[in-house]
Length: 196
Image (cartoon, rainbow, N blue to C red; front, side, top):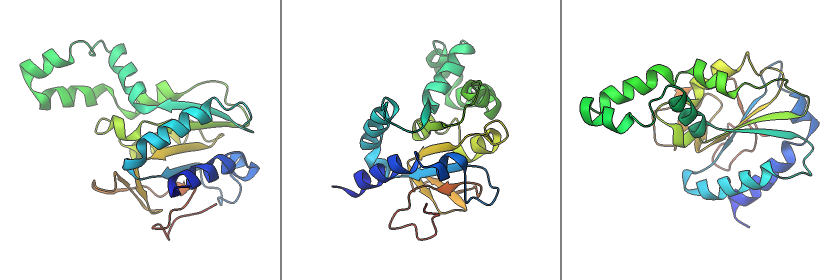
């Protein structure tokens, strides 16, 4: 069995434990966990996530939100989806990029991710992190999500690295500081990871 499959199997076990669901052992920190993986394993992770979401035997309830789909929904709400290519053609890529960033901000994402009521055993599962780049950055979104989802765990499927201080998307881009999360399943390379 490959390392990524072993790590995903471990993840499935971890998210069902009371320690994870209740945030035990986090020293009053918010219950945000990151599952880092190599972007080359994206299709394996997607397949695993799809299977996990429909698994009726889990001891938790996954609320999956694909951030790219959320972004597209925000674009639809602003009636820009069908106009984007014309806008880019007339005014250029830079203009379109700035326009998209104006309304696809943290507040818009948080509103789309919110649901009520949050129940014990719920886990907010964030996917599509790589797909939504550069319109949304996970370190910024997690800061905005903390007060709204303090009562349930947040699990981020992250195609990159997190060393406990910095997230680095695709393990290639400029690292961004974020220190409020924990690695849920460590990797061999991440000796600084918080392994549960």
